[in-house]
Each structure stands twice: as C-alpha cells, then as structure tokens.
Amino acid sequence: MSLDRNALLARLDLQAQNAGACAEPQGWRGTGPTLASRNPSDESLIAEIATVTADDYDAVLESAVAAARAWREVPAPKRGEAVRRLGLLLREKKDALGTLIALENGKIKAEGDGEVQEMIDIADFAVGQARMLYGKTMHSERPGHRMYEQWHPLGVVGVITAFNFPVAVWAWNALLSAVCGNATVWKPSPKTPLAAIAVQQLCNRIIAELNLPPIFTLLIDSGRDAAARLAADPRVSLVSFTGSSAVGRQIAQVVAERFGRCLLECSGNNAIIVAADADLDLVIPAVVFGAVGTAGQRCTTTRRLLVHESIEPEVVRRLEAAYAQVPIGDPLEPSTLMGPLIDATAVAAFTRAVAEARAAGGTVVYGGNAKTGPGFFVEPTIVRNARNDWPVVQRETFAPILYVIRCGDLPEAISLHNAVPQGLSSAIFTRSLRDAEAFLSATGSDCGIANVNIGTSGAEIGGAFGGEKETGGGREAGSDAWQAYMRRQTSTINWSRELPLAQGIKFGGGSNAL
Image (cartoon, rainbow, N blue to C red; front, side):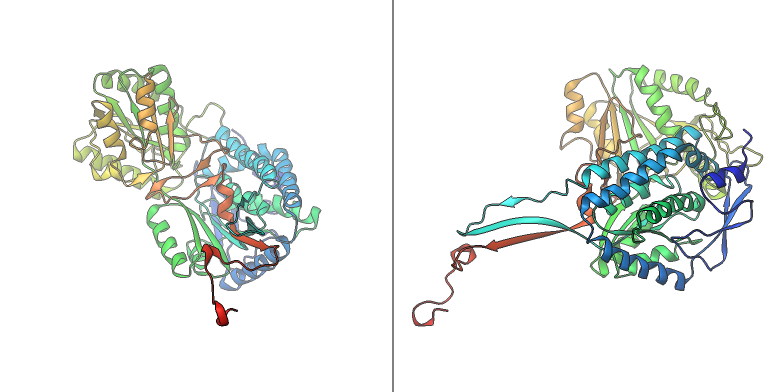
C-alpha cells in the first residue's frame, strides 16, 4: 500500500516532515541523543526523536508535581469534561493514528484502528466515572457521630507502557488517572515512540484549548533509565508498569522500598481448554485470532491449546488449514491478517523457541521459519505433541507460536492450565454448563480473566483487566479499577456534645476523670 508518510505525520500535528527529522512537541523535553523510529515491515526510518536527559526528566517531573497540585482542586466532573474533549479528538484522528500505529508497530491496520477505539471507549468510561467516584457511609458505634469514606487524588502517576499496545494501555491508565485528579507522566517503549508523541500532541491541543495545567506529559528515552527514575522517584505516587515479569519484579521492588504504589501488568501464558464436546466452528477462529493476532505479541495471546485427546487430530487438521489461509505482509494492506514482529530481537527469540520445542520432542506441523528479505516477518507456527512442563512452554515467547497439548478429563485440563507461573487470560470451549461453571469456580482457572466459548484476546474496557501470579495482580480499565489511582480516607464527624470513645473505652474516672 502506498503511504505518504509526511502527510500522515502532518495529519497528527507532528512537526517531523521527513524521515530523519527530529520531532519535539510541547509536553515533554528532549535534549539528549536521537532515537530512531523504524517501520518493522521494511526497516525503513520513519523519524528521529530527541530523548530525555537527567535535566529533562527533572523538568518534566517538576511540571507534573505542580500540575497535580492545581488539578486536584478542579471538581471531578470538570476533569471529566477534559477527557470527553480528548475522546472527541481521538474520534477525529482515529484513522490517522491507527495508520501510524500500523506503520510503527507492525500490527494490521484494523488492529491499529481497534487500539484507538479502545482509547475512545475508555475515555467514554472515564467521563462517566468522573461523576461516580463514590465512597461509603458507615454507621458509627458512637452516638452523635457520622462515619464515611472518601477518595482523594494521589498526585503524580507514572505510566510505563510496552510496544505491543503503544497507546491504548496509556489511555487505560491516564484517562482514569485524570478524572481521579492526578497528573500522569508517560514513559512509552523506545520501540514505538512516534505513536506516543502523536498522542501527546492531541493532549497538548486539549490542554491549550481548555487552559489546563500540563496533566499529561511524556518521557522518551532509548532504554530503561527513565523508567528506573520513575520507580525510584518519591514524587511519583503510583507506578503503572506493563511489560515482562522480570522487569516488573525489579520495578515493584524499587517502588516498595520507598513505600510507593505499584500496578503491574506483566507476562501472560494463556491457554484455551477445548473440551470433547466443544463447538469447533467457534474454536478454530478464536484460536487463530488469539494465537496469530498482533503476530503473537499480545499479553493475552493464546500460547497453549489444551485439547481433549479424542478430538485433538481433528482440531490440528482444521488449524493447519486455517493457518494456511493467513495472509502475511504489509500491515497497511487491507488483505493482510498478520504483520511483522517488532524487531530482529523478537525474530531471534522466535527462532530459539521453535528450535527448543523441536529439540524437546515437539512436532512443528505448520510454520516454524523466519522469512527472508526486508522486515521482521515469521510464519505463524503450530507445535504438536508439546508438554506443559517444557521450559519453553512455561515461559512467554512474544511470537505466534501455539503449543498443542493433549489432555483427558476436565480436572486434568484445569491442572495443566494452572501449572504455569503466569495467570492473565484463559478460556474454555464446551457445551456443558457444569464444565463451564467448574472452569469459572474457585478451583478452576487461576487467571484474572476467564472466558467461556470465546478466546483469550479481546478484553472489553468495562471489566477490570489484569492477572494473578507473575502477571502481577494489577487491574486496569473498567469496574472499580479507578480506585488504584486514588487514596482512601475514612472520616468521622462528632456532632454531639459528648466525647465517647470507640470500643466503649472509659479513659480516666473518679477524681482522675479528664
């Protein structure tokens, strides 16, 4: 597909008008070395972006602290109006921003547009939430007293995002954070900096039009220095991190040492259980999208397929036929269903994982190869005869590799399902109400997300998103996830003329009465 990159950047208010130009919008400072944004489909340079120095970091944080102090004084419904206006602007820029995501990240255009739609959806959710930051009123045990709880802003929230969802995860955090009264500092992946800058430019427009304090700011760097600073900085009340469990563990330890708050969305190793009575007309498309979508680079990607032994041959046969129909190529071409991996490192990880699975005894029945030529393309891969306890199956490889594992009855399937360190998303395909309920019960899936007759990918923003175990325990987006961005305060008012103590305590008495 022919694309005028300069025109695209201009549509998103970016100042870089040619590859190699340096883009530096308001809302962030960058006086350090430049970082290249490249198209993973052909490895061409899209733009170069200035990165932050230590002085730039301090200037951004000082700005965020001042903004948070001013923003917390604004009534929550008026904060919601700012988010509403940003949501309208995202609607206007959806096509351009979705195209930029496909260009820089490599996910297909439909998924790029879908990511922007997630931003729009969470904006709508946050606007409503701005009028529903509810506390509770409790009955006091003391007469003439009223007791209630309320929620107050935290201050500065640091959001560290990964390349695979370069803008949506920021929105899940930042837009709720905004209606909760905080200023948000964003540290995006250095693999997708231009998409972050495009969003910052949209935020700048709303901030300028409504004369707001700089509640959204940005830190671009070429590695992890800015993330490490956010984790260690006592000015940052909450650090929301999305990425690997190994890095999440480091972030959590640093934040805990200073008694800060941490919200972790780390690795997933998601499985679908296919029961003997499953409707295969539902199973196959769900598995293909879950395993191949975003080239296997979602935290909710389907990585393990636990199939009842009686139908395993038929499931594999259908999957092979479906995989053969997946067009791979330019993500901006409407016919493409799978684009490239993000970079050469990801391709190397894919190659190592396939080799390890083969060495362990797995049979590659489809794919298994990296493609030659420009771009970071690989074949979607099915590994049959896999075992759940293989080290390669136990870890998350960010690539389109599906391990097919035979199993027997439901208790065995659930046991295998839960026998990995991660606990993000899960699914079962069955026609049995009993089996479905067993999977959703306390002794069933141990994941934060559990689905019946739908796949592991494609969470809606209305529900809280997150997982257990090495996934980190964080929750973002819907339900009561907003509470992570606020501090709870329990308040008691004595409107009587007495001073009764709690628990019926009498302090002093007789001549010693106070």
